[in-house]
Each structure stands twice: as structure tokens, then as C-alpha cells.
Amino acid sequence: MSGIARRPALFGRLKAAVIGMVHVGALPGTPRSSLPLTQIVDQACQEAEAYRDAGIDGLMVENMHDLPYTVCPGPEVTAAMTVVGAAVRQSCPRLPLGVQVLSAANQQAIAVALAAGLDFIRAEGFVFSHVADEGIINACAGDLLRYRKQVGAENIQIFADIKKKHSAHALTADVDVAQTAEAAQLFLADGVVLTGTATALPADPRELQEVKHAVKIPVLIGSGVTLENVGNYLDADALIIGSYFKKEGYWANAVDPDRVKKFMEHISPLRE
Image (cartoon, rainbow, N blue to C red; front, side, top):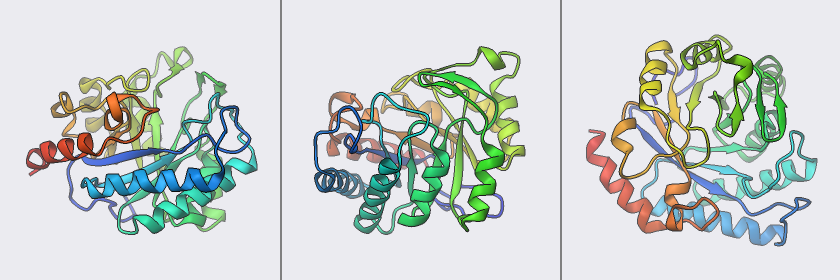
């Protein structure tokens, strides 16, 4: 990944690096929790290894099964995500590995990444405010970067969502996506994440070009990439893919290694 100031590029010079999503099972204390943590960890490692063997460029673990999300998940979630992250890191020691803790639990994600030896986090609500499913999410950049500094985690990169999916942005209707990306860059994000309006819905390729021209930090696509539309996103620095890599293309299903392998074989010559 090119253009990251002060920090090493996670993916070298690779164009449109592919980051596969490991959606860990519902964690202890959440409404749909049913499995012991040891089984959740085993499933996450199995999915990570399936991605690795199919040629993925990087991975990110996320507690997406913890529905409905809360803006302040309990310490049990942070602890469980740390255990999962550390196990996945051990299974895939050479892959760039990140974490997202829903919802907007960005300091918790930094703590998980630091303890588990991960490389990056995906952060919601980095700049500006928006109304999400969980309520109002306010900007956190100032507090988050101070926390990262205080705990000695400056090597952990922060990829910030802009005009995030599953959210209303009427509060910032007079601030376009390029301006939002510029604000994130000014506030020292290591990269920005561009999405569609909901999980599995594609980002607007025109917005990708607008944001690429507006900032010098990496631009990632965070939803809706498929084998059929990936050509629209080859200018992105990375592609975060969850739904398409799951069986039948549905995010809650298990990883389908054949879909991952076919996608990676397709995109490989396009990146040369």
C-alpha cells in the first residue's frame, strides 16, 4: 500500500490488495451468543487459514455477529476479540492483519491490536458525526490518536470510514465525500475507507476517483466488491471483502475457499 506517511506500507507496492473478512461468532454476553469461546476461536482460525491458502493478501477480524451492536461494548468483548486476534495471528503470522470492534469501539480495537500483535484497525466515526443504527456517532480522532500514543501503539495503522454505510449523513450533507476524506487526512488517519450504503452494496466508482484525487493517503473500498465489478475498484489501495467471499455471497455464512481462490486468480493479472 503506497502513500502512508511515517509508517511502513502494509502491502508493499501491491495494487488493490485484497483483505478478507473473518466474521467471528457471536461473542460471550451478546444476544446471539451460543458457542464457547474456544469454538469461536477455532472457527475464526479455520476461516483465516482458508483465506490464506486461497492466496489472500491480508485479513481483518470483526465481531459482526454481535447483533444488535452497542456503542460501548463491554470488556468481555475486548477480551474475547484479543484472544481471537492473537490466535489468528498465530495461524497466519505473515499476513497483514487488522481488527474492527463494533460499534465504533475504536480505542478497544487499538487495545486488541496492541495485545494481539495486529497491524491495523478499521475505525468508525473518525471525523464528523453521523447517525448510525446504534445512535449518534461522534468524531473520535483526537481522543483515539492520543490513546494510541499513550499506550505505545503508533505502529498500528488506522483506516477510517468516511460517509459510513448503515448511517444517515444529513448532519453533514454540506460536506461531500472528498472533503470528508481530506478532513480524515488532516486529522492523521493512515487511510480512508469508502463504502456503499449498506453491507454488500458497492461503493460509487466516481467517489473513489474523487477521493483518490483529494488525498495522498491510501483509499480502501469497504463494501460490495465482487468478481463482476472489481474492475471498477482497481485504483483503490485495498479492497475489504466479506460478503462475496462467503457461501452464496451472504456475510453470515462460512467462507467459501473456491470463491476466494477464483477471485484472487482473476485479480492477479489485473494488478500487474
